[in-house]
Image (cartoon, rainbow over the protein chains, first blue to last red):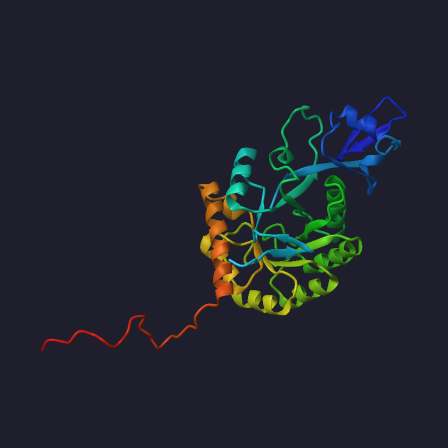
Length: 67
Length: 264
């Protein structure tokens, strides 16, 4: 399946992938991040049960220095 | 001095200096400068996470733990109400339901001047969604009042352009805003050096938010300390109430009687 992550297209073999699985693959487990899928926030508490769909567009963000 | 806390959205802060966390050499310098400034509220930006980073890579939050500071996530770089709203929803999720935010919607990449139409639109939605909105705006007193009426918890007009260090260019407009708005008015943007901060505080600003004036100084840590003192000095001078200006009537500070006799 194809997932857009932060503007880049990514292909995954698995067709049944949850957000928590993706977070693990991206080495982001335990990092302070927030995820928006197709314009909707996915709360951290739902990562383990939320299935990704082909064509999902994700924004994965963190806090950086800024004024 | 008497208790003179800054109160924003019902929470008390004893520092009236708010600082940004951008443009520093590294996280160690960021941390040292913020400690020297005494700031309790620190702004952060929300950006796409670097995908493919190493597991142990340090982050800003490791150096400035949210339990030690009040984070103020901003919408820097947003040019539409929609982008600003999405960014702050992400920030709220990122910071475990934290509701205090800085809204800024820019209108032009060259001057970074705020787009007040989009800002007002975003503020309405964010206040409805339960955010405590500290809002960056122009120094237009009518817009400032409208943003207060919408329910913003602090109005933050620019003193001059973001990152310009040009100082307090229109103290008269700032004064009108301070006189018309009941929520705290903080100068956000334009302060270049300590005297600028003192001038803004002497006008009656409730606080100042700055980043480049500290991070862009040759010695950011020393400048952070200078800004802390300037904000405190300006605040005390404001509370003390300055003497009236008397352009043509000089008044000696020493007694005029009891002078020794002149020898002819």
